Image 1 (cartoon, rainbow, N blue to C red):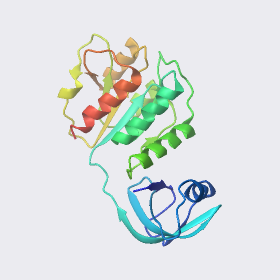
Image 2 (image 1 turned 180 degrees about the vertical axis):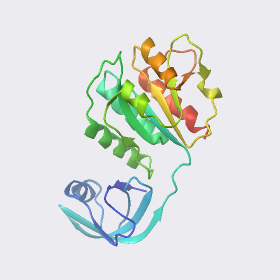
Image 3 (image 1 turned 90 degrees about the vertical axis):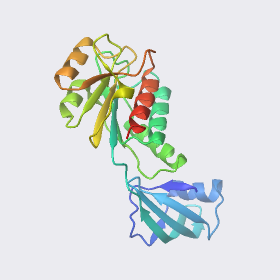
Length: 232
């Protein structure tokens, strides 16, 4: 299945016209023909199947064959992560956590953060590309950067903070979550500061460990998300 993405498509659309960029891609790169079947999602669970009825360089049109609304996961992981110093590593992280199916990603600005600016639109494009490649129908929400302090104040569901400090922690693999939503906080390469850890605990976040190894931010994010996903 070749999956396309458009945030505006709805289940009741009987016809759909691709934008100029996708139309060129379909006609010039993929070399699709009239009669070819295509699948489109809006990233909100919709699977819209259609048949191409017209192909021009700047305009490809399709008519609806059928549509299906997929059910979302019963449990949702919200990843809050300090952006990596390298843009490439951050983009790779977004790609991989999209592929494994988390619900949202929020870059957080921490005391030890090395990167203080992100390109949100670029990260959204990376997530869309990963969604299409992995043939999923739910796009994670990519949020604007938020300070650590503001994020922990905004949490209304159970939260976990993974850190390398020596304070008492639960092994994440032994943590059983029963709520529908959970937040996982992953710090920068220099880890969360002692004050941040203390503030998180005061805000009732649970300190967790991902194991004995000291992991890169992106590795910890993927491992932590995976552990929680397989415990759904």
